[in-house]
Image 1: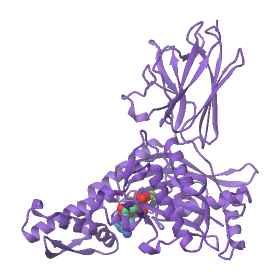
Image 2: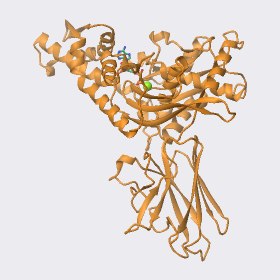
Image 3: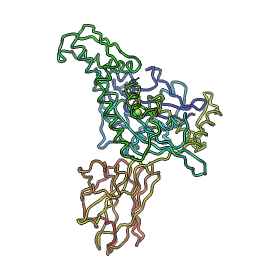
Length: 550
Ligand code: ADP
Ligand code: MG
């Protein structure tokens, strides 16, 4: 049984494994004659749910029975639900339908699939990650691990072109999102003293509402106006059917323009056939502001890591097939741009990572078999050799997707403030552990409400961005502070305000563990904050811990 890597994308998903020579290969979607599957679900009727291109074709005609961009909803609170034929679906369940389609792709070609690695954006927090894993399990997979999309892309690049110590900027322009990530590859020694290449995420940026869809929209407007010019009609006079006809043809025209200098589109304008020719130059002119927007995000992401010197820029995502993208990035990073299978690189990297994991674990996978087999079920020596070589070369460290820390009182400030002390910083190696000693606010305090926060700050130790009730303050959205939950620490009678309370945060792939120890009584209080943080937090500022004993 092979292990598989899955890129569960906002607009397109892709699945890959290692072939009999140990090279990553994508499982073709023969039905749509494509390497990817559109992440679109059409609830045709109560007995039939369609995923992929066929579902996409219903967006214009049956839009209210189609779900797309579900990745934007996964793990979000409060959870959004979808209602079809009397049944309610969560984003996790819709994502599971897309994953099941990928599973069927493998099985229809004679493969068996259980163990997978699924990719997630580097900026996904714990909730989104856990929901993605849940979707995988619901589709019947054993999810070996999740891996960040840019890390997977870097892994797939380095597997083909091994280089020591590189700083890579991953420019990922997909269908609905734009992600910029700076990753660092560095040589280090693993636990057994072997030299391995470590991949670290240094900075992330981008926009989850910027992608190929914006290019489609511009082209749509352009064709609509060209139809008006040809027919002498006003845009308002153009019938809904004509609009649908245009909508259905823009993506194809856009793809043509990536290969050719011009594309012809035939449209039935209110019943009469019209031919519109679009040149690449026109297309580039009408979308140049979008290209500039992506380059601004590149700039602002680079500003987060002023010391980083970029060695290579990887172009990832289907939209980087557009020559205007490569040209713009080349202009900023001359001679440094690399582009290999931009719509498959993430899935391929995940496939490499999946086989690294099973080689590391020996035969301890769910199936009890090793990663790589040939079609007759025999282990291919080339496959396992290659996977072993990769394992020897790379170590992908699991990193904390966010920063974490408790909310405590800072009494040193001229006016006491409730602050968030960042214990564990985004990008730290997991499992990450940090402890610190705090003290009750006053003598005879009955209890302590110890709140745990997630945030995006990379460097601040103390962030004054929670109000007295422990709610994130709207005035500081930059840090993206989110309350995860709280731990109640009951204190015995007559507890002095000098009683040290030792607070520990531990973060691993499954969540945040918070522990508080009354070091005088030895009593331990702990809680595990997973992602479904429906924890009821009482709004009270009275029972807190303070930073130092003074
Ligand atoms: P996701 O956003 O799900 O990560 P992809 O990385 O596969 O998905 O990107 C999908 C986007 O890439 C879509 O907007 C699609 O139209 C666009 N795309 C795919 N191939 C081409 C091409 N040859 N030329 C231009 N755009 C393309
Ligand atoms: Mg993608």
